[in-house]
Image 1 (tube, helix red, strand yellow):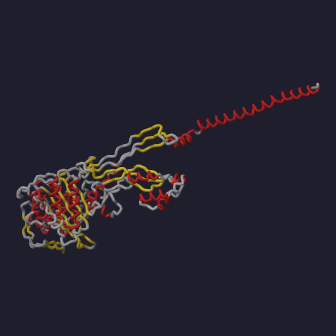
Image 2 (cartoon, helix red, strand yellow):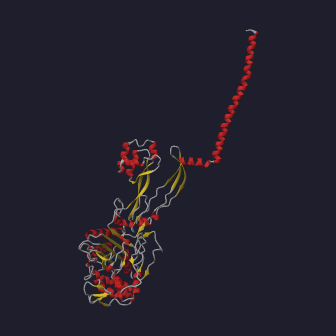
Image 3 (cartoon, rainbow, N blue to C red):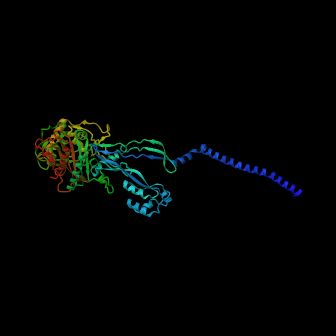
Length: 591
């Protein structure tokens, strides 16, 4: 190698040594700036997240991991006075869909599964797929209140986006027997009729809740908060289901046998005012409401007002006794069996001549009650009707309860007062008439009727008060006993083994311009007379057969209901004229 070559090589090496440090420095600066920028950006982002707007991101995170689960709660029980269940809630499931999930997972591409789903729900595939056709929707019910077995089958179909949720359905063990009284709930388990509606808030509990945190796989990892709910209240009625079932059976058979449009009955405990039975026919099955007619859902005992006719005659006799115009042993001259008042005629079916007060009730004399009503001041007569509770609520305070119909005129003609004495010109409900007879049976003490045993209702129902003297009330009950005995208008109302007091009522139904050809048949009775325990009112509306008098229709139904109720309550027979054991044979319905 020459000397020049060596010098050139050294120059080249020196040049490289001069260039390399400058290039390394520049790269280092670039990397450093990038790293610092990244950390600065991260720091700025962290500061933005932690300081400036943390709430939105926390909310987004919680929405992915936090869930609040409601603890299941069921509607309270409805039971009779002895604890027999009348309404219970049973667990069921609801089937719903998330259309967005269905479309994201191509869930509609499973025709066999959708056909199976449609078959079990009783719907068409097209209708089901129409419900989930909008991918923007997140929730739609496919069917509510399905049985656990059906829900399990749907769950096994494993269709993406089809889910189940817990809910409850009301079940009524007694079916149509107490349907109008208990009422029904809707698909959301909210009371819409009867006592279910009236006590909806009491029967509905507040569900508890539990807030949890889930991981990315949906597993529960932490319980953050638990809220205790409020249990639903139970409702205990004064109804005795044994008597309720008996009364319904009898009025349903009577409605069919006498070809009437409807029938009703109420049984009341004289001592307490407790309603032991309240029944109506026709009724409906509350467990299958697919074909329910509105008229079947009406609780006619409290909603329908009618002119009571002769069932109100004992009150006219009692009014004259209370005023002091007559005494129990007095006689009223009804000759010649008719009289004209202001151009209108009041008459009996025949001329009874002179009648005692008991015979006026026994023979249901229009002349007798008219003369007694006209013998007292008009205001005293009206006040007696008001005080005994005919124009006021019964104390039941049930939804739809009618207060009756009564037009208090400023001027009354003699004929209007006479017709009022035998039950025309005033309309009352079966429950109001029951309260009237319970007042007479209770020695003249009026008290509110009760349908709820628990929870206790105080204050707003009213308090017991004496409205009739005990002496006169007992005397009227004794007089009404003759109605069910030989010569009375309701021998078929007699109950073997028991002394029964009561009164028939056969009234024509009012129509536009007067009265039509349809009748309302009533029998109101008390037993046993020696120590009154029960009052039973039976109403047969518009009987369509050949029998249209209350003594032939309502009276035998009363006998069966009252006789059965007395036996169920183990009330001691008080009729000394009946041979031992004869009272066990029951009533004479259908005779």
